[in-house]
Amino acid sequence: MQKQNIRAVILAGGNSSRMGSPKELLKWRKGTFLTELVKEVTQAGMPCLIISNHPERLPAEFIEQEQVTVTVDRVASAGPVSGLVTAFRACPEDMLLVLSCDLPFMDREQLDRLIGYASSLTDWDVVAAQAGDRVHPLCAVYHRRTQSLWEHALQSGELRLMATLDKLRLLTTPDGLLDNWAVFNANTPEEYQIAMDEEKKRKTGEH
Image (cartoon, rainbow, N blue to C red):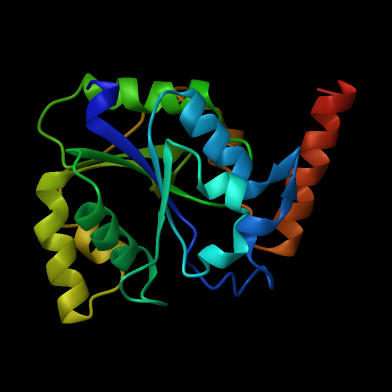
């Protein structure tokens, strides 16, 4: 899979109801969850599409980067199914690396591993990260041939991501390919604190 035929898509259009504040704007390292993830994506050599229902929240110097574009979700509050439809309509690439905005430890090395693994496979529609027994469909590579199913799901009101994934050839990464922390989601204030504690440990060399 050549990098020029894949685009990263960061889903930042959710309501962040469990967090209580916009997850993409949470302070992280030198910026926010979103700005740091975009940095890793672009440094991995990929253009990036951000799907946000509130682009006015994003700093102008951030969204005006050459490799970064921003669009609003076509159907607000319809979850990742609408995000996928929006992404496929907006992007010309055959493959989309779809990432949720709440992956604070995702980095370019992990992205390269996931993309490299997908490129080694045949007969797949979606290649998702897996850590332990949990599959992460919002840390996954989606092929354009799946677009029609996402369009149908959105049109019919089937907004459960797994309901459509069950109809597709979904492959997952093998144990050990990705760092478990790379797919750690910070969905709640408690998980955000866990991420902050882990980051502090890394900085102080406690690991």
